[in-house]
Length: 114
Length: 401
View (cartoon, rainbow over the protein chains, first blue to last red):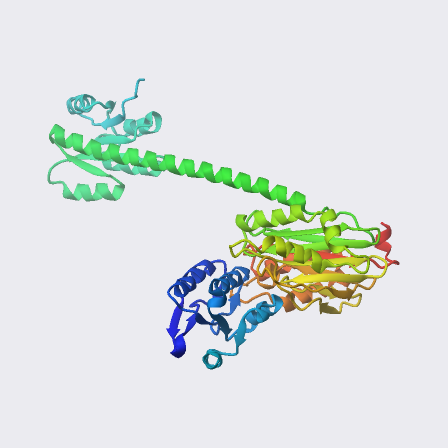
């Protein structure tokens, strides 16, 4: 379900490919991103621009992926829409994930940090 | 064991031909049941339970094609396999017979081998149908068992919830608990923890269904009034709901799956109205004062069981006499209408604002009703919990009742 694009400096941008990341597809999302990590991807940006809704299972999957990367790399999120941003705020996920306004901003910052 | 031979109804008006056909069929190990015409054959279909009919086309009273139609009109719960005996070139009649619902044909004067093959086809279909029926019966039975177990689990879960018929320590409390799938991943509790303090919590396990409900019930069993008191009243200075949440986080973080839960818990002082609370990813409740003015309580906090090192904060809010706290799980704000629009926090807040006028007892039902309307009667996709706690006005005449 996910779409990925590899950029310079080994950063992978992931678009979930659904407008709602929920209990219905959270496991598939996690499995596919985990496969990317197992294949060596370590600098990841999840692009939420087209995701209008994230439920508790979706958030659980995202945190699961973050734990999977651990100290080996970085997982940032970009382009949070209103309801998703609200979900992040109420769960304090803005303190767990580095968030960027959009993918371009994330790419620039992450490349600088390397 | 005597096995009943499979009955085959033979409808044929010519006595000689009928005898020949019947003896062939009996010779093949079946039990031929004779019918002189279509009417008799139809009666035998209803009386004998036979599932195969071999019929001539031309017969007095009721011919083969009309017999086929009549059999189909019966709409029996088992299928009747109809084989018609026709002449070699009677293609038009065959077309008409197929329209009427015939399954197969034998040409008059066919060999025994041909008859045997036709009957074998019919019996194979019959045994397939019986097998399918048996499988679906077993599945239905298993499903009924599972449903029964789930209902028993749901009853057990409901028994964990507090009985809120009576007011507790000067608080009027009402609730709604609506599982999306018989059992719920939600849990809440409400109890006195000292002479002057009321403790309460609401929990929402991520996901829903059986998996989430097992964790929610475990949490419900764990958070007894004694546990709640011990965790939150460790020092005499002030209640410490964050300590309760931290201890739960320590307990539930080590699991290597993605399970976690959100929580809101608090302690209200009956004399002063001071609320000490801790919010852990649960939606902010609304505080509603006597005039219907609302404000969200809390601006967020880490969920429980997600991040082992998460820290939790104690916060304070004040409940005026007559003021109420409306706690609502995210199933409310996340409920979608048929055009996929979320119910949203603002609508939850609007219903909460009616508390002083509608009465706190009715607010949970009003929220459930508003969500039902929003979803056009479709059941919620997530478990809903509403808990409404009102600090009663000392001049409140209701409280004397």
